[in-house]
Each structure stands twice: as C-alpha cells, then as structure tokens.
Length: 563
Ligand SMILES: Cc1cc2nc3c(=O)[nH]c(=O)nc-3n(C[C@H](O)[C@H](O)[C@H](O)COP(=O)(O)O)c2cc1C
Figure: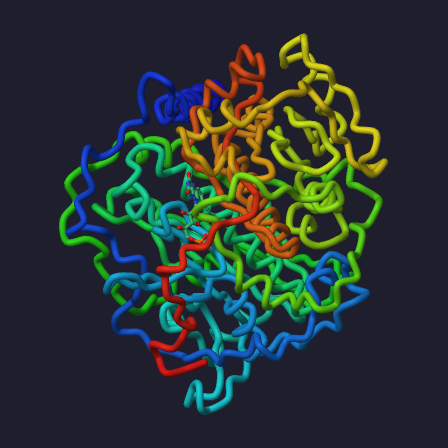
C-alpha cells in the first residue's frame, strides 16, 4: 500500500515537472499554443448560472474612508465594519468587480479590480455564507444562506445552493462567529483558448491575484482574510458545486482555494475544521442553475493541461507551521492621507507602454519592495500562513541614486545560502547600504540590464522602459516536496506578490504590469542556475506609463444605469 502511494506521488511529480518544462517559452520555441486566434470562439469572460435567483449587490465602495496606507497597519487604524450583506457587497466591489470599461473604435471591454493574463479572467468567485439578513429590496425572502456565485458584469450573486429550516441550522453551526468564506475557481479554457499549454500557469497566477484582491478589500473594511491551507480540492469542489473531472468537456471549472474572511482581527479562527462538514452538507444538497457555455466551438483540447490538473489536485492536509522570518518592522506609513484605499484599488490598471525615461526615487522603490516582505500578523501577508517561497530578482533601470543592475530580495532569510550557492559564482551579493536595515536587498551585478530584461520578457519593451522589472524566483524543488499540488501554491504566491506590486505602483503614482510571457530558461541562464532548485514563475514591471488617449473610459456599472 505504502509503495503504491509513493509510486503515485512520483508519477504526479513527473507529470507536473513535464508540464512545467513543456510549457516553458525558450529562445528556440514558444510553448505550444493555437496557431491563430479564432476570434469567433473567444470564451465569454463572464459566467452565469441560468435558472438561479439573482441577488443584486449595492455599490458602496465610494463611501469607504480607509486610507491606502492604513491597510498595512493591521487592526489599529481601520475600525472593523460589521460583517453584513452591505459590506460583503463592498468586499466584492473591491476585489472581483468591474472597475471601468474601456472603449475604442466601436469595441468595448471591461477591466476589473483583479488583473488577468490577456484580460481573459479565468477566475470565478463564490460566497459561502451562514444565514444572513438581506434588505427586502435585494432579496424578497429577507435572507441568504448557502453558496452564491458572483457575477462581476452585473455585480450580483447567483444563488446556487440555499438552505433553510433544519438544514440551515446544521450549516450555520459550522461557521465561527463573524466568519464567511470566499471560494475561487478557474476555467482553464478561457486562457487555453489564447495561450495554449501555458494557460494553467496563468490561471494559477490569476488566482493569486484574486486572493490578494480579497485581502486588500477585506483590509479596507478592517477585516482579516486568510487562505486556508488544509482543505482538499474534493471538499472545495463539493462546497462550490463543481466537479473535479476535466472530462466535463470542454469547459471544466475546477476549484482553487478558500479564503476565510473574519472580523475579529485577533480571533484564532477554527474554520479549517469546518470545511469537511460544510462540504458534506453541500455534497448532499441540490445546486441550482446551469452554467453558460463560454465558446460555441473548441478546436483544440489541451491534454497536457488536463494531465497537469489531475496531477496537482490537492488532498486534505494537516495544518502547516506558521510563517517563519516574518519582518518585524511594520511598513512605513507614508502619511499620505489623501490616498483613499478604495480609489487606489479600483484605479489599478496595467501600463500598456512606459515612457522609457522617468525615474522613481529610492524611497518609492524601497517602499514597494518593503510591501512585498512577509509580516505574519499584518495585512496583506497575513493572508498566508506558509513560509514565503518566492523571491524577486530585480532589473533596476531608473531608480534615482541606485546603480542600474541586477538585484535580489530574498523574502525569507533561510533561503540565502542555497540561493547564493545556486547562482553565478561571480555575483557580488553586496547588501545595498542605503536601503532600510530590515530590507534584505542585494546587488548581484551592476550595469545596464534593459536589453536583457526585454529579451527575457519575450521582447516586450515594457520590461525595459520602466523604472524596474523583475522575475519572481520560486523555491521550486522544495515547493514541490509537499506534493505536486505545491506547484499551484507557488504560482498563487507569485500572483499575490504581483498584486501587491500593482497596488504599490498605483499608490506611488506610477503603474505596474504583470508579465506572463518570458523565456524561462534564459532567465535561469542569466542567474547561472543549473537545476530546478529555483525556477522563475512570473515577471513584472513598474514605471511611468504612457496613456493611450484614444481609449475612452466608461464608469464600471454605467451599462446597468448604476453608479
Ligand atoms: C498573470 C498575468 C500575466 C500577464 N502578462 C502580460 C504580458 O506578458 N504582457 C503584457 O503586456 N501584459 C500582461 N498582463 C497584463 C494583462 O494584459 C492585464 O492585466 C489585462 O489586460 C487587464 O488589464 P488591467 O490589468 O488594466 O485590468 C498580465 C497580467 C497577468 C495577471
């Protein structure tokens, strides 16, 4: 028996390693992708469940007074709002909602608080809630209780699983006081339609962005948000009314993670233990609604993605030890009271183009990096109780007072010896002396890195024309030791870091952009890496954007006559 399990684990690990290698872009070839864009079959970026009760959500975020800087200070600075229907609406408005429409030449497209590779939005969001009062104008029954799918296009909830009477008692008793759950899932087809085999990576990065979007939204309401580490995908699938099979051809939607949202920032919440009983209730329940078909035709089936999904399904696991090496120093409050949190969150955008000249200051740069450092007790990194395994390798192009070159920011001090050992022996590893003492920023090599940064980022100018760009290097070998499912978790952490950088860039008056298209092994060569102990999983750039004045901006819910 033991031998069988081990063999299965080896198999899964091999499958995921093959997926990772096969989905790399390299100087010689890009990862397999559709030869042309079949625009007629572009997947619908919005999921709907026909035949469900619709519960409209109010649009309240304009009323929120929290400042952006206060989000980082934990419980002390933001008065926790009551966990009620109206504030849950705000949580969605600040995480997965539409933040603007853009239009040009007769076309228009929605942008959301959460970014997404190719703006294809594979991530779906769910609310899992104990019985809660809802004003009659939103729900004539006067309450919600169960599992609800969020539709960002219409800012509403679709009631997939409702409980009342005796069943609701059993359900409710599993929720600790003042606690709700958010579930995230991915529809891989949305990304595979355009990006082919690499799509699974993009979905998991997007999930990380989505989770962090909830963390910031919750912080703006004075709440905690933590990704649960113990549930297995089977329980999450049951809870969200999804399957685990990729044979739901052609558009399977698969579970990713659960986030516990709690009001009492000091509570030692026991929600992890409640997931199995909640999932058992949901499994026996009747989920309402039929999911819309996203594309009328599906020309290619990406079997490599399906195999990888099966290999990295997560079993139920026990609680892991808490974050080590948390930075003790709180993030410096810049004291800019004019930066409203809800405004920064909703104005987040990707820079399409950078001006190639304007620098940022050292202080701005250090603040952005500092926000990436783990602080186990403070937002946003209290979202995760696992040890940080992703480390920025930075190409500094235009930071006043800092020499151009390649830098490293190991986010957990334990990794330093192995990182130094794995990297090019010529690297300097000299700690940047004018950086804040607690910021472990090392110069590896000085010199103009613009050309190489651009080449690594599939030739994209955005990697060279900003103030800096970076690759997020994962402790890949050790990250997979928990099981092949650790693969997805590494991408989530990388996506979360990307999200922090997006918002930090906005707060600094510049702009960030995620970069999913990069030549993996070219980056590894540059660093002198010889094996898979470390792998780069996501790239990012920050700088002064050139805005495209041809694009018209339309308010997020103007199409509904709201807001
Ligand atoms: C995982 C990920 C990968 C991305 N990769 C690229 C990229 O390689 N090049 C690029 O220009 N933009 C990239 N983007 C930015 C998206 O195109 C952008 O998020 C999307 O168009 C939505 O626009 P918004 O961020 O302004 O809301 C990426 C975004 C994410 C989240």
